[in-house]
Image (cartoon, rainbow, N blue to C red; front, side, top):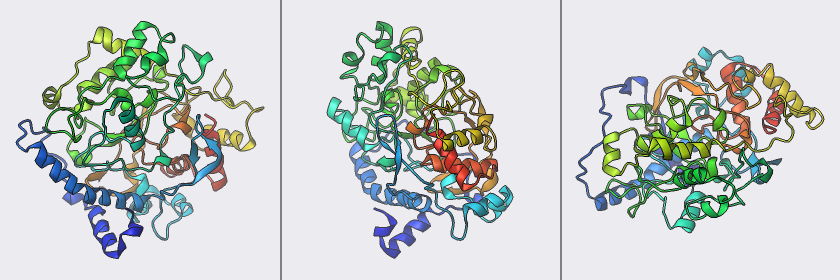
Length: 465
């Protein structure tokens, strides 16, 4: 349901519910971080209560999305992801009445903040139910896992929020650094416990094949487990690493970071791609993990259970053996390569002038010059393997919106831009739906003052990566 179908009374109710409250109403510390261990409410009661609450929760969140974004399906002409899914074009962030992008460009951060002119779409994006949180999967992934494994990732309390057109193509391609001659080795299939052996036997060595098996094996997780405190209607075998990182890439599944409290300050996190992790140097929601091995072990020990080790023990933590299982899983992940970029030169990762259009070449010039993008995103992988704080809190006042505090993001990892067109939505929480939104966001935050024509050329360049 959208605002257009609800009538004036419904719009008013949802607008009031979704509007933020002032900073004085936000409790910044003092609440307990611990979850309830002794579950006294029966599953039947939980199920009835939460299914009853679901419609109102989803209406409130939809009101936030409709206020922030143009969610219409507008494919870009001649621009697709690797396997042919159209990219969405245009800036989808909505401006406040009377504000233009040109006017924002002329304001200082202080003026934007005082006039409350910063687009809501550029503020942190709440989880579909921020007070509850947890893993939420797109329906196309739920349907395919159910078809292959008869394992149901449907949550009875919540559905995924962003429309499919803003998510990566499904299933995504798989490229291996060890077998570049094969191109996409997925054969157009979603890799699961049911087909991994058939697809990769003879391509991987036995150690890597075992690592892949563990990556597609379900293990208990906070919302999907065998206890009464679950969010699946029937007891669940759990989730796999590749339920979020589909085919070693991403399907856009969302979660909340496990290492921030209180709940209102936790960040939504949009699943990052695992392509190219071999060249990265920091991992995890706060980038506190220094190796793929650390990240792999941490995911099932902590991230699966919101960072609560007591609850993890109760629900069925899967403790991986570091010397073999963790190593095998990490070694396979390090084989995941970026998609081909035929317009880039091998030697330096920049455009080959003989293959690129004038718009793409101009976009590259802006990327390395006026746009300041290469300050962090250096070729050939377009990352500096570091972290940077954009201090977005300069542009807006702290408030509570639908259960989440609009606050600064803190240091953000410089994710590689290679293959970026295959990984919408953008930024760590998915708040930027298109590459056009991303260019507009950084134009305001970095104060680069790009013209409309320059922004279009920048998008054209990003699509070549």
